[in-house]
Length: 308
Image (cartoon, rainbow, N blue to C red; front, top):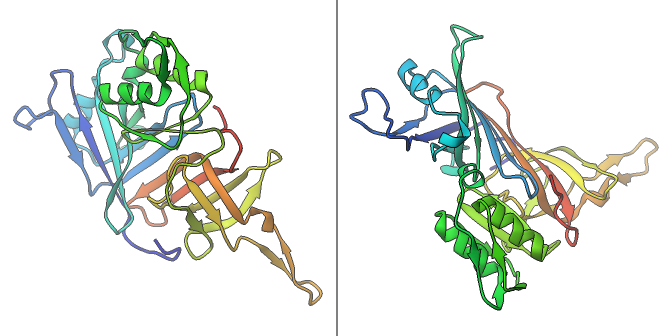
């Protein structure tokens, strides 16, 4: 997506109820797809052991649909897999940016008549609360296969980017979320949740995919900001090529000063190869001048993923 793109930005949301509930006037359907409405989505991919989260605001919904979603049980003992999927379209097709379960939903009348519906959602939310049978394996066991088995059980895809560690007679108990954390902590790998994908990498290694070259002509906004830890913070126009844990190459980020006729290049250390340690998409659809950005903490290759 070019940096000067003025394409119409859209968000599409799919709500799915699994509590034997349905939406009014839907012939019993438990799925609601919304598009063509003004929406705001803030999707956060934070470092392990946190799971991705989303804050969603939708304007122009039917009252009956907001009622159905706001009446979902919030008692932790009654939490079920009421799901929300968020897709983004920058003018070149739809891409999923979040899949998870609804934590809370509420109607916001404070701006009436501009009423909105607000949703908080989290990936692996139910899997972090509901009990799950313990798993155990005899003898030396491939840790990546253990995670792959858990992914298959909960309907997630799995991506191994070179982890070969083994565990001896492993035993994992607790929720699915607990079991994943036990395995990851035991082998010290990097762990990323993105959409319906669980991905693991050796420490300091990016996910195995082409590195996105981020420059002022490909979406870099302003200049990278260096941190004392050796990391950099960057803002870019949202692009589906940004993958949590994926590689990014910064190019052309130099600050050029010429106060006395002699060119100086500052901030050039930001140029080079990094990987995405944390990422936050802030997207405002159907709003003139709305935000459509990705804010990323980029880490040098070879450094362990920042933990939340």
